Length: 314
Image (cartoon, rainbow, N blue to C red; front, side):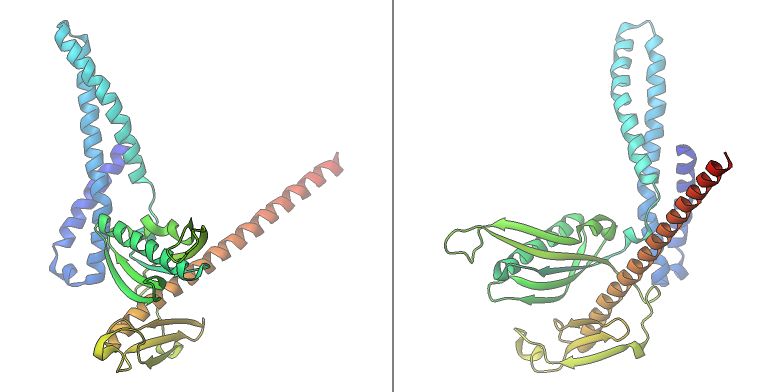
């Protein structure tokens, strides 16, 4: 089965490479991006499969040499068999993992949100440390981090920060980072050396494009205002900051980091689409959970009725 799956992946990879060279597809950004994502998924399958099959052939050849009469050749073959009997199962496990069904959302870029929780200024400093950790990790993975908005305190901490992280399988890697993160330490703001517990919340939202989340203009209330905080001569003197309210859901997104009002609007809409997609997926998950509960209850009731019928008939 593995060989047939690898053959299918190899054939599909050849087709994808051919399509990526088509000028019409290159000009279609959405389609080209989907093909590039599929290409990144297929390459390790094909490479791992080819390596596995080569190791298997080498193992069969080395085992055949064990029947030779030359003791030196047999000893060399025995050493090779021992090494290959380690490599082959490892490659089989790796290929098995690569062939597991993928969640299509895993390949998406993400909106990363970090918000300080309980702990005052120390929580803001902790939130800044957590955000710095994610940016360093993103750099190590070759991902790009674009700051969308940030609210700093006087000590250099972050009350909240929102960033876009783009790269390969970003959501699949970070999706389980969402939640509350806590730390116990002696904060810089503590004069008496006491240990404090601080917390921040992290949200990892898959980015949604306009096809996935269509937002009618009538559903939006867009307000402009002057940005606050440091920003030079321009940013605090013009109404470049944007606040977008999604009327049906009540979600509010603001962005003021760019000098251009249009750029701030584009960034705010990116965050809003991600939040709406998360709400949509959460509602679908809740609906599926409710349906499973109903089916489970119906099955239990059916089994109970069947038991009662068999009991009364006997």
